[in-house]
Image (cartoon, rainbow, N blue to C red):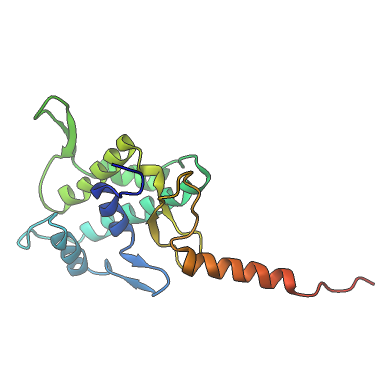
Length: 184
């Protein structure tokens, strides 16, 4: 796999983080039914699996913890997961499974908790395959979209140069063109 090909585990994480659309001010995870729909659409739970009252806050804490962590990927040094993300990860059921020549991390149960644990498995897999640091949050505060950085040197800062990058460069240009106040 080349750096320009996004691994499935990274696509899953990107899609989960992007359930919050800062620019459009929409959130797919405002209700337990929204969480159910997102998890069912990705085959992480069955339609018959119950989604309880604590599942939504857990999912939101996981998403925001991941979002914070991905924002730190811009400077090339991985950020600390923070106490919230670490606490959420500690509540999700994971185990090491021995089904082949190489042990693998896997959810320890089904249902919503297992589905959210699958997201942590995706994090571990993306760290293992080197794609984790390429998953970033757009630096535009009005966007904050998660994207996969396919640049050779991992230096991309915006989700799309034609949109957020262009806006940032136009703002910087206009700021440089403003007359400076005369000093007395």
